[in-house]
Amino acid sequence: YTSTVTGLTQGTTYYVRAYATNTLGTAYGSQVSFTTTSTPTTPTILPSIELINVPGGTTTLNGSSVSISTFQIGKYEVTQKQWYDVMGGWSPASAPSSTYGVGDNYPMYYVSWNDIVGTSSGGSVGYTEKGVTYYTNGFCYKLSVLANGGTLGSAHYRLPTEAEWEYAAKGGQSTHNYTYSGSNTIGDVAWYSSNSGSTTHTVGGKSANELGLHDMSGNVFEWCSDWYGSTYPSGTSNPTGTTTGSYRVDRGGSWGHVASSCAVSFRTFTPPADRVSIGGFRLVLGSTEPTTEMSIVTTTAATNIANTTAMLNGDITFVGSPAYTEKGFCYSTAQNPTTSNTKI
Image 1: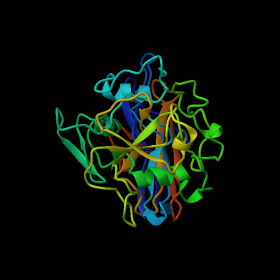
Image 2: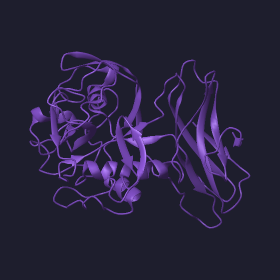
Image 3: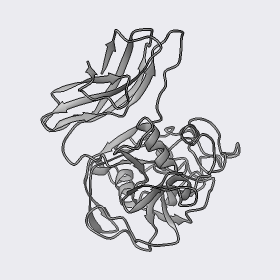
Image 4: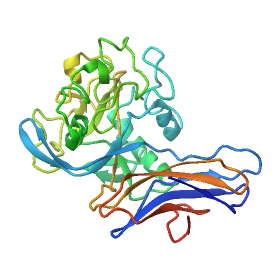
């Protein structure tokens, strides 16, 4: 949905969040910002990850029934542009190589688990999610701060647990129990050793799975938050695996793996400090997992920006139950506007 706002001040930065209200309260989308023109300018867009809502339910992991709570996960693997924009460069990861694919929409690789989560060497504790400490020098923390307008809010980006990853790769409650994520024909959904040309490919180039997620089989393997154990994570509700280890879980296979290694059930592991051309990641947005049936709202970049007007854009990806009774936009020259500010 969209709305045109008028009466703005020239050359002024405004912050916008889409919202939807039902009897449970008001749900807000992520914040975006734009600056009205005095001379033509490009709107400032805060870094964001396109997310897919994964309704909770039960799944089978290695023969055991496991309950997974609702969560939101990236539609695509994190791209090289997203990494560079958040980190301000390639460090601490290694720069992508023309041998394995370079470009804004190629998946980020040569990135270790430690680079994503951060370390105590040069970083301080940022937050803890699913038993993992995320440090201030890691990608997840930096993205969480930038996406919230410069301060850490309640929404924290993190890696998926192994159980969450497999549940999403299978298609959640919409699963057709395919061998690969979205199909029994691997070439339809994955870049792997027989069709990749020994390189990565731009994200989203293959068909999505039942939830609308791309590349969960193939392209680059995806880090999970768990330590690797010889057996699946135990527990009947949101398992997180063993508490210690030497390797972190990675799932999904890659452009360099054979078909069987790209199956949604295939498990493997990598040392957390390793940076390899076949390894990347996608993110989950934590601490905003819906514990009620409030709406899930996204805000996208403002368009048609002029001196005193702009078009605001948003979407409701989950309507809530009961359904929302009001939706719109709130905006202000201060960050994190709410419906107590100006709304339309």
